[in-house]
Image (cartoon, rainbow, N blue to C red; front, side, top):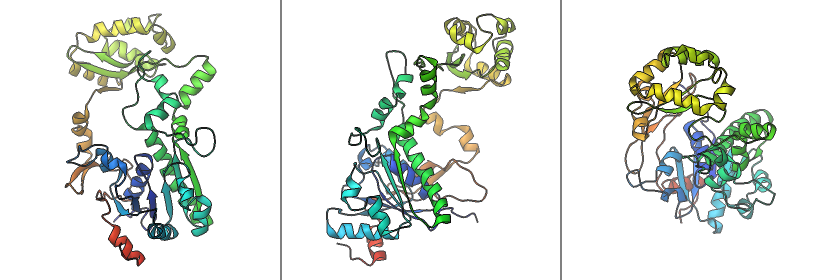
Length: 381
């Protein structure tokens, strides 16, 4: 039987919304015990929507496998329980408002004085210090601040990414940072202090357009579903729908002209015989492709692209994704228990021969309060 890699690791999380919960859910998937500290009204992501049989789609996604304890952190008793949990934990994760963890007496220095082996993790919008430290930071706002919206959509009509990408990337860096610190602690025996800001996390992901603009003299154009610096790349209309594909090199371009368009002479056309020229003459290029694809049905266009070795895709909605034959053939779906019954969920995307994962239940608010109090030898108020 494969082992759960983080079995025996305890994580205490004062978390809300997406970024920190995304990090800790992945720790829970790997076997860590994640104790989610909530106020009596719960993580406000519980109320984002009611689409999953009355539960929030956000909360279901982010909180499987965790234990929920309700604590009043304005009370002496609640803080006593939290301090006891932190004293026994391996990891403390928090994404409270700037300065809140210090006001609770569990800032990095105080928390490590209480528990020298603790890994103290803070996720915030802009990081400590600087003029933006106290600014509220929502996903869309960080997409704006990092310049992401300047390279999405079309000229004059920027479009945000349709998922919480700033939160997700901050959560991913928190998750990988925690794993790194656990490895480091195994050698040094000491805890660590980690800080991840949404601005800097998403900023890392924006490095390619930054380099392009900083050293190229002009920013990449907003090109919708096309690619700012590769052509052809993106959606093309067929006789009955739309096909997406991209050409990566001149070998593929020649194959595309010969086997897909069935116009081999285009490969050497002076307007199109390098990627740079194809980008410069994108309108002419799209006109040529549009005429050829307009006579092809989607199934035939995809078949030709596949035969030519050209990467392509069909545009799927969420129902199409749910029914994706590749996910079914690879057995990627499992049921997760929840207060509203079993919920079909994707298993973690990393496959390991040696390590297992678990798909724990989505907790009700305060579901584990009594049990955790009993473990600590404290009477439930």
